[in-house]
Length: 358
Image 1: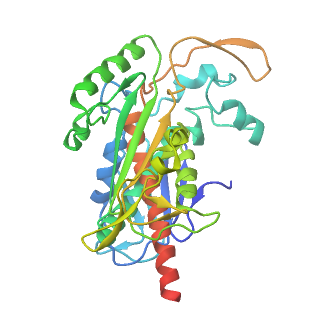
Image 2: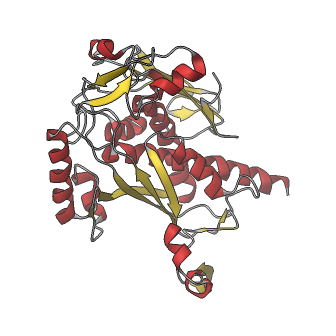
Image 3: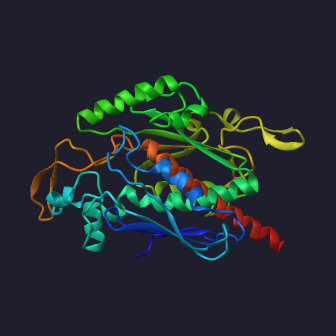
């Protein structure tokens, strides 16, 4: 099935279903001699795994990674890296009652339209469980970027429902159940999410991402602009409904004199006085901070009763059983960070190839 491979030089293929025996990723194009262990990958998986707190799903998965190929004596070989995790806590029986129904907000009907068959157990490939493969690959990309350019990708929740963060404390992000950088608003956000969960509902929000030490000169105009590939990468995550860079939609309200980032020189380096563009100009990074935001929809799997139809077109009431996230934001953030890293490493390798040929 096409559509499961991402990247040009650093290529990632994910495989596996939500309630299948295992999931994994194959990475082809990772340069040799990068120090890499299962712990490097596990640290990122632990940030994404289910069952971390009350705002997320109660499904308990250790998500323990195993490296099957591409690593020898703790270093990458330059050959395909194959990674796998096993599913341990799937409860497929929770979905037997709805195997012939189309759940609102899900890909049940669209997958039936496209393939004529679907895995109804948790959504199969359309489930957010698929993203473990992205995070495994992203862990490798993150380490390569940090080693080569000291690149650091930080994601955090800025809004949940109507509640917005008012300040930024980076050290608090991983202490917050919602990965919010505002200690005061984080508690209010959590209360809002738990209130929706009690009602059998879910909530969405906004996550912001900041990339420090972005490699410069990344992006391939005109169709592979950096923001174009980042947009595709982020929109490939099912929960994403909007992406903006820098000022984003706010820039539509500004005049050119207000929106343009004036150039200056600091410590002998050309930079900008402001960063309204989010670090990308003409589709190419200039080394300043990359800043972007994503709008995240409420999780589609809710206990609250809804109306839909079955595969015969007959009207039915739907009540989704099982264990689901009341707010996907804290687990979405490491997935989005990984997709950003995959775009950056792929473009970094493409830029290196261009420079080597000149």
